[in-house]
Image (cartoon, rainbow, N blue to C red; front, side, top):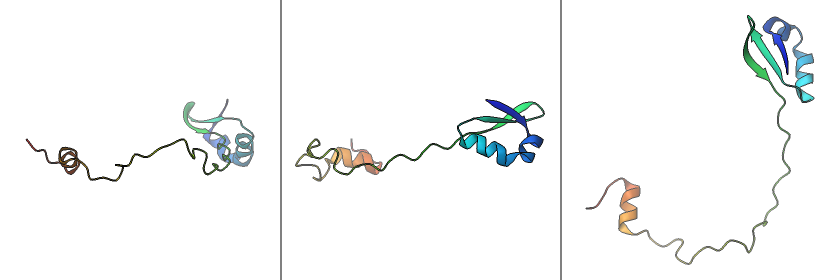
Length: 81
C-alpha cells in the first residue's frame, strides 16, 4: 500500500487513479497522518439468473391470511392486556 501526501496526490491524481484502477490501494496523508484511502472499485457482478430457486421454496396457504389480534396490535404499537 503506497502512501502519498496531499500535495503529491493533487499533482499526480491521474497517475494515482490509474494505479488504483489496476488494483493498488493508496493512502493519502496530511502532515504525515493518513486521512483517506484511494481504492479500486469492485468489479460488477454478473446479473443474477431468474428462477434459480424455482421449486425449492414453498409458501404456506395461510401466507396472506389476517394476522392474529395479538400480533397485529404489536405491529400497530398498542398492546392488549
